[in-house]
Amino acid sequence: MFFVAPQGKPNYIEIYVSNTSGTALKRLLTDTDIQSLIDASISGLAGEMPIVANIAARNALSPTENTQVLVLDATGDATVASGAATYIYRFSTTSWIKISEAESLDLILQWANIQGRPISSPSAIDTAVSNSHVHNGNLSQLNKIGENADGLFTYNNALPKTAWEGTIAW
Image (cartoon, rainbow, N blue to C red; front, side, top):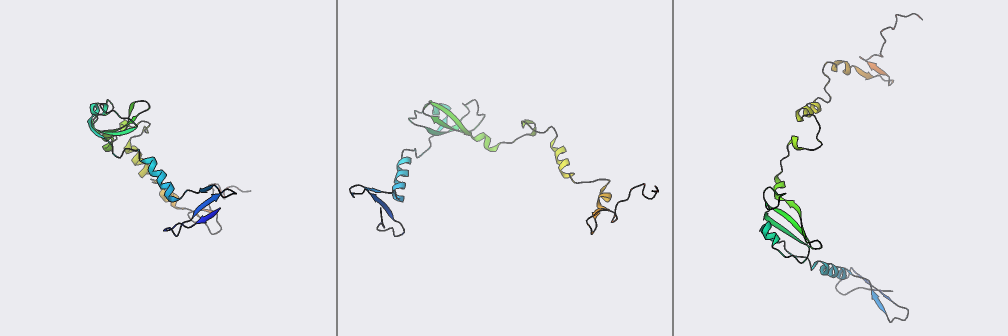
């Protein structure tokens, strides 16, 4: 095994391994080799996404590989109420699969249309949240609860007393 500093790349080394007789030589992959492999892998990908006017124009395409297509007026698809949609052509099954549609970009949800929503109204939920720590009628009593220097529970700065304290003789 030996290391070589390639010319023009002073911060890199190449690693070579030879057999015991020195007749066979193998070099470890370098960053240039890896980039070449990546470039070769992606060179077959389409550089552009076809844009067609409507579903009929999409169906008239004859893709020879998996392809993504933007259909500007996709209302010919029963699942698209208005606007554009993006489809992937799956070559292995010769089928189009919708992956997005423009009408959902400006989606407005209505409470009544949300599946699994709470049965409470939005205003009831808002009221519950705003009143989550409101103590109407007993706030003055709650403010009297405390703790003395010994860590004992107090009420109105004194240890709590029972109603029968001092009325029963032991």
